[in-house]
Length: 207
View (tube, rainbow, N blue to C red):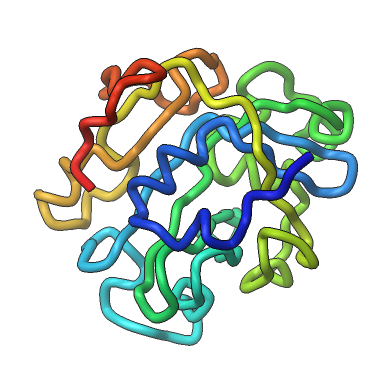
């Protein structure tokens, strides 16, 4: 498998988010194909980076190509991929995946669940990968706890508003910054999603 190079992530966050669909997360024997993501960019009131650099979000201000892992509600470890140049504060949240290898390991970690429920939601992805906060700030292109490799892009991309950000400014709540693989059933929420493009056509989401 071919790792995505660091400069893959050094681009506008929305572009990276769309292009991550179909890429493969590798951790030991577990391989997961990315099927749903959310973008969080600069000047975005739903982003952890909105109010500036803190001890918690420091990894988000690294150069693109690093992992940003944080603890949500004291339970769920959420996996994000940092994007753009160092100091920007932008990342892509991995919301859902499809298992390609190591499904028995994933089922055990997820309490015996089967089907899309295994990996439908960012907390599920973190549990399936046995993420710890030690992964936070590590590189994605080699030498870190996880690696992200080239995969099979979706034939169709769906786009819609992000989930669970009712606290954000209205313009950010409504922004179509959630992207999903239209050819996969491994998506956490299909409500609000609309076709963005068919393979070979230009994407129309604002970037």
